[in-house]
Picture 1 (spheres, rainbow, N blue to C red):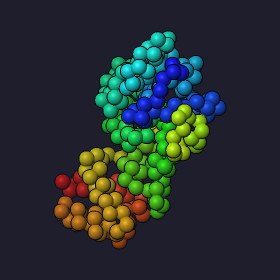
Picture 2: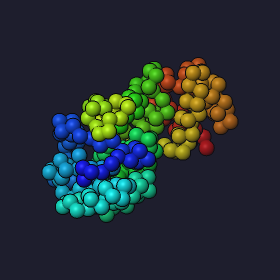
Picture 3: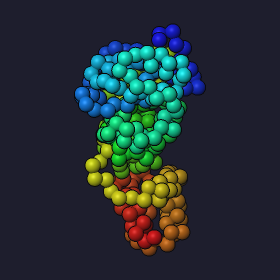
Picture 4: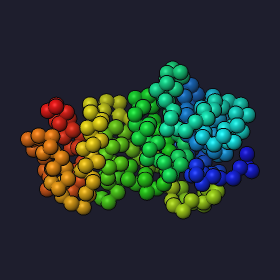
Length: 256
């Protein structure tokens, strides 16, 4: 498998640092009897150490050549597909349990993958992903900082998010032009009840003009919804905690 040439259109950067790989697998800590699903196994840098701890292991690989080579390895169940087309609910049902999802995600489509998985969160135990460090910083950000934004709010209402490990470009072949990091995402057992579509629309509007006060963006949107309640619009979106966005969405849903 070492002869495979990384394909730019798939955003392929293969992890090669053995110590980093071991630290990632230790952080995941797979246990016998669990169903682990790896997205984008590539040349198997994480796949092989994971297989040492758990079999069978399910992998999702879009690259046809890599998928064919992976099928030759004992203990692997290979799904050759675009991850954005995978039905994780059906996969969990077939396995008879919730999934632990891991992977070195293609940086060019990491956000779409995260939002796709959000739609299946009820079927997931936890997620551990390698991502661009800038993205992980945004995912794990607290209010009142530049990293806090739409991605933060849309994920933190449903997951406890933690940056676990920083990974330098030198750990990859070819080296990416950015720093990377491992993020741990654990779904809340009892999340707030939300109209996800309404919540997503509201958060997108709130951060559409993030340098301006919310009265210029969210305030106008709330007026179209006939909102007559109390909400401090003399702030920027980055100053509003996730819990306040959630509470506002719940009030709006009840008003409908």
